[in-house]
Image 1 (cartoon, rainbow, N blue to C red):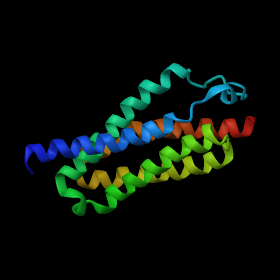
Image 2: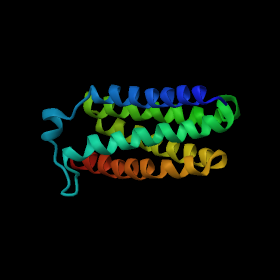
Image 3: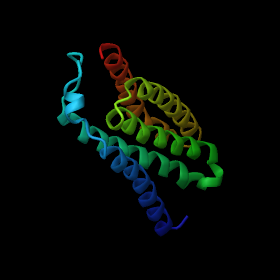
Length: 155
């Protein structure tokens, strides 16, 4: 694969991930979230933007590594799973912050965790570094799932 083609692919994966990030950013926590009962271990608001920036960048690199190794047709299942988890990622922000549907958002994020696990497993088979790169994302979303569950129980 030519270097230009690889760079275009990387830019495409980054654009895909940050399109979802942009969509999610349209639904900010605001007053509604500030008024919720929260556990003491809720991370500070200032942590979310840098963590998500790193995670979206890492996710894009992982997808690019898989795509670069086999092309889309050679990693169809892995990359479709990746795109599906991106959709569930973006929808969570809309459900939770946009619609204030904590319980439905909890179901969404549970499916998201499952999709991340499947994506990481398929990525691992094609590119071990790509599978490893997905682990911090899995960890963060697993934590977010526990927080979502706790918020649902408290509110």
